[in-house]
Image (cartoon, rainbow, N blue to C red):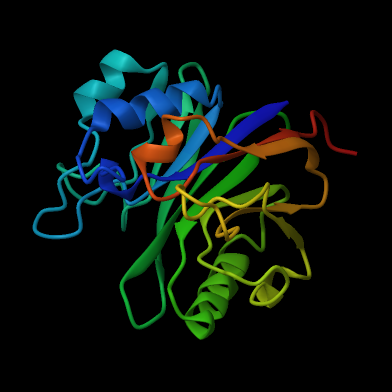
Length: 230
C-alpha cells in the first residue's frame, strides 16, 4: 500500500498572512505519506526561491526532494515539487510544459514500487478550456505507462465536468472539500488513477494547523499498487 498526498502550500503563507515554512513542514509530516506532491512550492517572481528551504526539508522531515527543478534555486517546476519517503527510489523524472494563457507545468516520475508507478504532479489553470487542454497533454504524456497516479490542484469546481480528457483511462476523484481552508466549499484538489491501482482509503487533513497553514487543505489517498504483472 502506498499513501500519496497533495498539498497546495500557498508558498508557505498562512491565513494569518505570515510565511512560516516550519508550520507547513509540520503539516506535511503529519500526513504520514510516502509521497507528497506540492503546489506553489516556489515563489512566483524573480529566480523563484523555494517557499520551504532545502535544508529544512533535509533536517526536519523523513523525505527526500525529487530533483525536478530547472535551476539551482527552486525546489519545483512551475511550483510543483515532489517529496518521497527516504528509501523510496525514483527514476525517469521529466518536466512537462502545459498549454494555456498562464504559465503552467507538471512533473512526471516513476516510483520503484510494485510493478512501477508513474506519478504526475500538477497545478492546472484557472480556465476550464485551459484545464481540458492541459489534461489532454498529461494523458498523452502517460499513454505508454501501465499504472499512473495524477495528483494536484485541478482547480475544477465541478464534480463531473472538465475531466473528459482523462475519462478513457483514469478514474478521477476527490477525497473531499479542500478549499477554502477556513470554510471548505470546493473539492479543487484531486487524484486520478488508472485501472489496476485500487483505492483503499482517502481523506482531507482538517487539523487545526492545516486550517491556518494555507488556503488549501491537504488531501491524501491510500492505494494498492500491483506487485506483479498478470
